[in-house]
Length: 68
Image 1 (tube, rainbow, N blue to C red):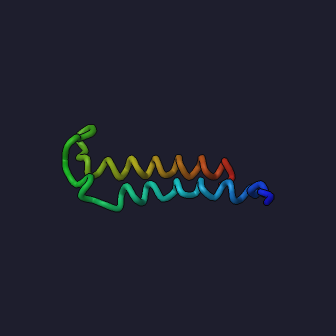
Image 2 (spheres, rainbow, N blue to C red):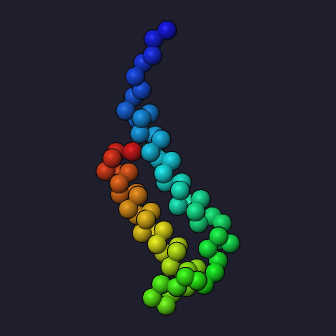
Image 3 (cartoon, rainbow, N blue to C red):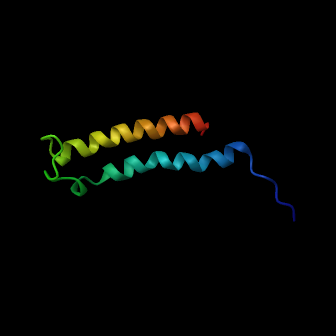
């Protein structure tokens, strides 16, 4: 019984799972559907998803440069 090393694409496929994280976080609005805490006068309901837009862009860039 020989085990062959995984190919390069198989090793990187699991990295793509990280792209699902923002979708899961923002999928359930009751989690962030409230006003407090506010950030520079902006309710949580608005700045939390906007923060995730930035996080998603950074995450996508990191995965792109890793070659996933």
